[in-house]
Image 1 (cartoon, one colour):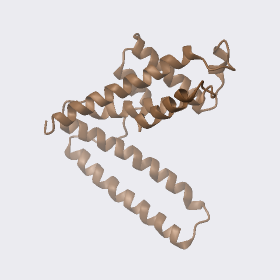
Image 2 (spheres, helix red, strand yellow; image 1 turned 90 degrees about the vertical axis):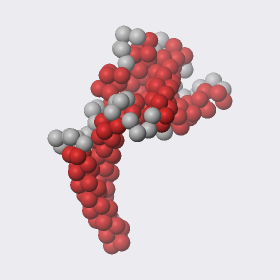
Image 3 (cartoon, helix red, strand yellow; image 1 turned 135 degrees about the vertical axis):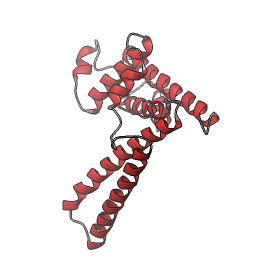
Length: 194
């Protein structure tokens, strides 16, 4: 997912001078989030800890799916759609029970969600380095763009033009985290069974 989003930015920039001023921050932020999650999942040396983190991430995804599906419960659904929704929600409940059981077997007191992505990022990088600066810059400008806040435009000298000085640390932050995720994946696939 991270590489797909990074590729969208590269495709847009390679074609010619960028025409969009903020959209790349949103896409790069998604690349950063996806790769940071991979790093968080693969970081522990212990296989049990990696499994537990995968369970936490699956739990968070199931909870988000459950919320999305529950939003449809008041929608104008056909009888078949309503039945499918009810069956899907029941399946989610069963999977949550299985995840809870496995998390307990791995030593967890309870099934919990992963830490917030901002905490993951802060734990992974030294904020006083160029890498850390790129991550924070991307996280904050990407957040502003994704949520429609214009403060990022207010801070630039030329808000109506593409700004390479703002783009450079953003793409650097995404690239560094993707690289770290790919390295961890390579290390973990080479050390199966530990």
